[in-house]
Image 1 (cartoon, rainbow, N blue to C red):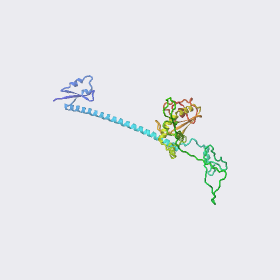
Image 2: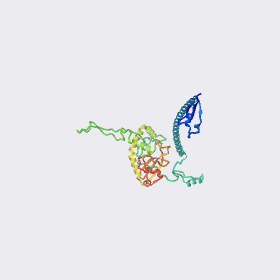
Image 3: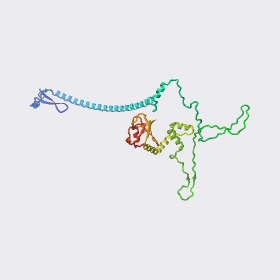
Image 4: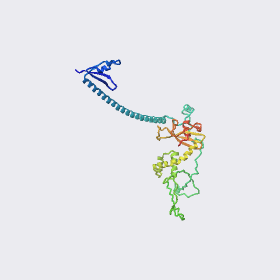
Length: 375
């Protein structure tokens, strides 16, 4: 009978090593010695069939382990991809939350916030509380028994005289009256706004000299315009700028008013014209800004003109038009209100010792304007 002696030891590889000896213990004897371990002195005898089965199982386990490692790698990659998607979704949710909170603060300020900077004193409130309901109140306007200022005369306005030709008759018999000396005058104030076409006729002429520097037919120069092929006159642009920026009338409403008066102008024409006009005011704006910065004292305050333009890092519409007033000039700038000014771009903060005294706000809103930054 063939006896196989197998010695199982844990080798440097991934699985156990099997040493097989036939008919004796030469291998085991070689391992015996002064440094032999207890497990080296124990022997296990198996058949070759069992030895082959153990090797097949070891290979199968190695294959299963490799598959498991590959599957874990795929799962880890899918997990990383899903986590990246979740982070992007979380960032989008945080951005929407910040925008919603900003809009909520804006709406709460509009509904529950202070509507004006002028507040009634405590004494006035107490007086209203202790005043009886039947106490007489002084009415507003012209007081009875006091002499008024009379009708306001406007002699500087041009006068248009209108003569009436209706004949006066007797109400009883119907006989006509005869003209007498003098007349009664009644003054009525009227206003008339109308559009018209200004036709500029440019005469042609022929040169009489022999210099040769003029063509055969010379035409007078065209009237001055803001830009070439501009059909709208200066009076229309002046009226448009005054109505929009001085009186606060929307452009669409002004164009509707002009259309009803017989002057239809497209919205695109006005928008393009305003874009062309903006660079023409830059030198004047820079000069006014430099003049205000050189003033010894400022008055600064924010207005209720909100900024609805989307800008990087801007949430909500709590951005207002700020006004810086000096004794000789006034400049308006868009700034965030609140919080305090945050430095952006190439603006350099100004030292408090270099900025003039400013009434109304703190250094956080005033120093950025004092810095020599581009508009």
